[in-house]
Image (cartoon, rainbow, N blue to C red):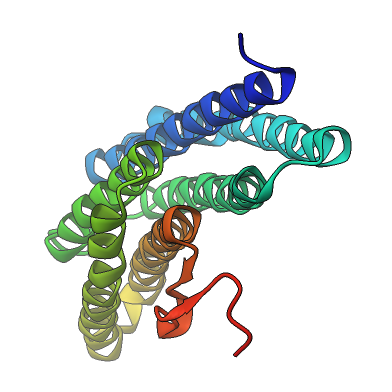
Length: 226
């Protein structure tokens, strides 16, 4: 029979998976709204943010209660600490979905600036990173987590490419500035989602192996003094 602390840990994992599902759904809807120029879907993303915020509070409170009541062992303590960090990243991803929806609402006020090619490609890559970061967490798959970390540089390069192209539009025709700036912000919001997915992947590696891979500290493990 499971102890109370084991039941709490299982419930915490379920809540994190649910939180991840809401964040994934929000990003997917925001991207669909952008590409389809769908006003109603963009507004639905804005309304859905409240559910993500509420669940973030529930997860935080569960983590703090477990720390206070159960004095968890080292491995469980690490899981709870990572849960707090992952919870924060998932909430921030929800915020980026809201930002994307807001940019879509602004872009809908004017005609389309240009056919979107790089942004949909970037969005597809970012969505996959997010989905796989959650899979890596659930399955404790450090190989998958490391592949996500490696893809972050690709997203950064694509963001730079998109910004350069849109700056060219702005210099050639000042009337495009508002639309180009909004598309630059879309790219930046997607880049931030990739950063949060990478954070989750790094947390998975720390959770499973006790290794810090942030800032390329892959050789440092728990208990190292230097």
